[in-house]
Image (cartoon, rainbow, N blue to C red):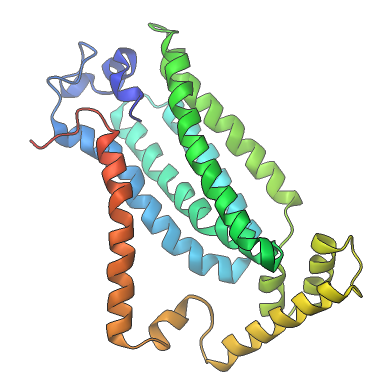
Length: 270
């Protein structure tokens, strides 16, 4: 979004009714710019909350597929939006897809990775997140050379559409996590998935049996608590602990909020 807010063709198209007909943001109310920037972050938070519970119900891979489809559909909406309202609606919907993927992908990685590689897998995922942000900046920069063509701002959405389409297709080849399968009573499928992931399909391998036993024990432990999944945090921990956890989580979010604030040009106090 930061690259689009310095693109005169984009500004003239979507902000012409708000003082941006000349292709600059000088006369545009900062609240309007703020809405177009923040709408995605708000629904991303909502999407992450929904995906946590929904992933327990329908499975991790289906959540990835839903998130990829939402991203694909919303990128189309933004690319062909006739005006500001439709563009913001598309960006708002896209936030749900961001939330779904941000919540679900790390869970899949930790649940399918070997125990000694889980930290590495999550680290790789967040490394590629940063690399993706870097790539988006270079994509914006590259398409900027196509000014004054409409492709100068539509190009980045073509990249989004292509990548989200690949994600949707690949989700059909993604295995469901053994932990989710075991938790929902599919024990044989869980065992076979562990074997396929870590021993070429040999369910008798020692380390496969060991990982499978650990998964069963974890599922039984959660069941013994009375509430498994996302409800555990409100029933196991006492109130002071929950308050502390919520405070830490909110503080953890602040640097990201600052990041979006700093990388959104001309979003300044009115």
